[in-house]
Length: 599
Image 1 (tube, rainbow, N blue to C red):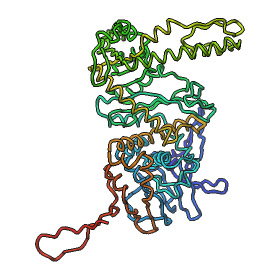
Image 2: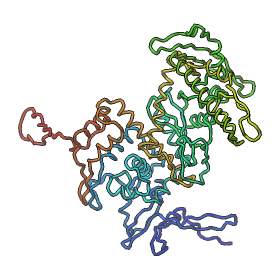
Image 3: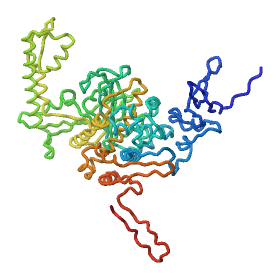
């Protein structure tokens, strides 16, 4: 039986016109082969072709890998001028601007472009997307938009008409959806691996989570949980790991909205290991404390500083052994710098490894602190709580108001210093002060504690290191404040993952700006916030006239201060100083110094 001529491998990359709905699409025809060996062809549209045979690429082309773009075979008569300046398709060093005359705001986006380069974010994103510079620029444009405009992405195309952005094309609603849905788990992990290479060894990193309310009703992770903003919306949970050394977020994780922090540690530690963050020191709050998590840390050799609850475990045992009969804790050391008493305890703990292997905890230490002023405040709060709760329960008892069965556990938790008994009808049968609960609260008043694993820190060093995590709280304030990402406005899983990726990119930029501002007195005196810095840059414009070189308007006043503080080079000719170009050609001897004019 004769067989036909085998198809060339390049055939599937030949571009032809596909007429559909009155429009001419530049299309290839990839195919799939079914179980019977039959080929099924489809059309893949890369853009449209106008009547002059000029090719206009669409988001499919922009978001395609560079290697796939290079394989496309276009007919010889087509005008491909729109793609000649794109990355991977030609030389980008064009001097003259070709297009309509434009006059757009440029200062804030120019500033953010420099931040993206200073943090290495632009290079990392380009590598994440396989060398696709346009896709990296689109992600940055969407991240910039979170800084500079509080409206939804549906307005970004209009915004691009008045603001010069990194994107080389207009971002429509459909292209934004396509972009966010093209961001994969591989992209997320690749970004983490690249960021890990930029970290130094032994960086301190804070771990915390925040709830994100959502308008989507069909997302997998939405749960009621405990909405910290007290909104009647379902929510998801986002975990952020923030480097307290580089002052930048390094990792994020999306979780169901009702997931407690203590259940997430093993996943976080495992993913950090997979992403290449092998030598970081984690700082966690009491929400992450559990026996299982401690054993995870020991088994994986993870270095940790963690706040622990004083009312249970080794901390409670240590507090019970401290004599407070004289008003001063016996056996504890006093720090005159902090007015705190402290003591460190060495703990022995080991976990079962593979087979008969036993893993012993490396330098597991408990640090107990006592604050006289805190004890007085705590004791006052206990007495206030007892008085208030007694009045509440007494009022319910006297009114004979029944408490629904499903609300009784909540009622008991809210009145935790009371022992309450109910009739079957739900009415309060009897109540009294829970002496055991009061005794425990009184015992631990004034105390707080922490644990360290794998570190040689004395109690005051451990406290100082743990205090660094206050900076982590500011990242969520950035996300839900200036970035406006306190609500998720997506309805599909793929769009949600893409949106969180873009938000993480914006958070890196925002964290860098905030850190530089906070450490530069010349900025903190003039600019009360990150937003005020961006507002100051708004008067800088980029003017582009067809057939001529673009030019940027001068930088003046505090704009110079901003650039100098951040170490950004101001574009040539935009500083308020002018160096004379007067030629002394023909004269002999040493040339005179150039004349400098300051405006």
